[in-house]
Amino acid sequence: MKHLPRLFVSLLVPAFMLAGVAANPAFAQGKEKEAPAAKAEKGKSALKVHLENDKVRVFERTYKPGDVNTEVPSASFRVIHTLKGGTLERTYSDGKKEKNEFKVGTVRFLEPGKGGQTYTVKNVGKTDVVNYVVLLK
Image 1 (tube, rainbow, N blue to C red):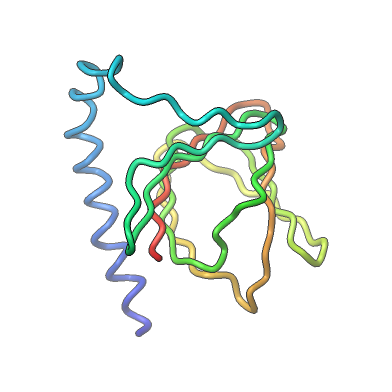
Image 2 (cartoon, rainbow, N blue to C red):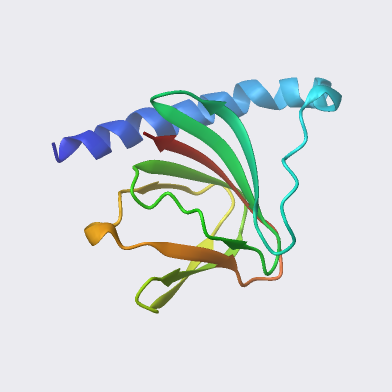
């Protein structure tokens, strides 16, 4: 069971790289056909779902400076690929805060939170942060 996350990451990282190489020319040609991201409420991060079924949800989460995300799926395995970097701050349900620096191109594997502890995420930096997320259901 301990090898499952390692296997998952070893399969997804090359998939992200291959998808990026294959998608770049396609995006350059058909940008006008791409659906716009769902409008976020003021102060809330924007979510754009690319794929969702009974096993996986694939989406982009965009944080403008000051935006907050209260819908963090902390009870799921997920892979996060950073498209635009910056600084996000987690605030846990017990009040503890933690700053995370996201650099462009970084891929992270997050396991479900221990003890079911929930948290919110806020962009405390001066730039937009965009993460591409693959969430296992």
